[in-house]
Each structure stands twice: as structure tokens, then as C-alpha cells.
Length: 115
Image 1 (tube, rainbow, N blue to C red):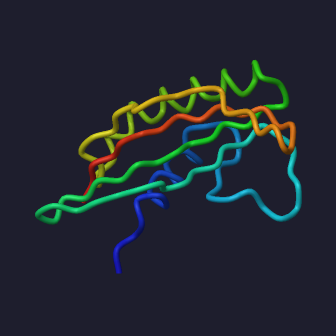
Image 2 (cartoon, helix red, strand yellow):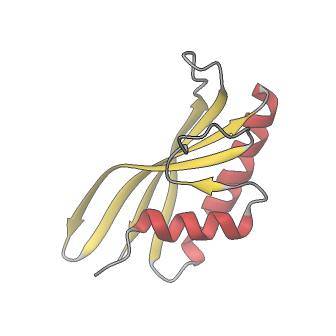
């Protein structure tokens, strides 16, 4: 069974960032900073896979969320060095503060080609 690309990126980010990275917010509330990775789409053509990943950077302040987002982007720009990844391109990034929970976060959306 193939390992999902989200797991590959999760392991990579946990190795290069100094904050916890996960694929969902745990039921028990944890304090920022932390990063959440979510696959929002994907496709396959001739056994070459494409995935769109939303990487949310949570911070205790808007400034902390934005600086963490910059660290995430720097790391993701180097994700192409991973064996499975052939492209890691920033699609967009923006302030994505969660108004319902009043948690500051930024979101970087990446287009990933992998096999």
C-alpha cells in the first residue's frame, strides 16, 4: 500500500520545523503554535500524482502565525528534495484567521507532484 503524500509531507515538516505538525487538530485543545496539513484535492495521469495541500500555521498572535507561515513556505519550497516529490509550488497563501474560535492562522496552499 502506498503512503499518502500528506504523511510524507507531515514527517518532513515535523523534521524541519520547531513546532508540532499534524493532520488534524486533536480533540483536546492545544495551544499554538502548531501546523495542520490537509489534502484538498488530487489527480493522477500516467501514474504521476498531483495533490493540493493546505498547510495551516496557527499562532497565538497574527504575527506569530504569519512568521510560522513563512517558515512553512521556506520548508515546502525545499520539499522537492524528497525522493517522492517532483514539484512543490506555492499556489497561494493568506491570512486565514478562524473567526469562530478566534485563533490566528495563515494558510499556504501548495501544488505537489509526486509518485
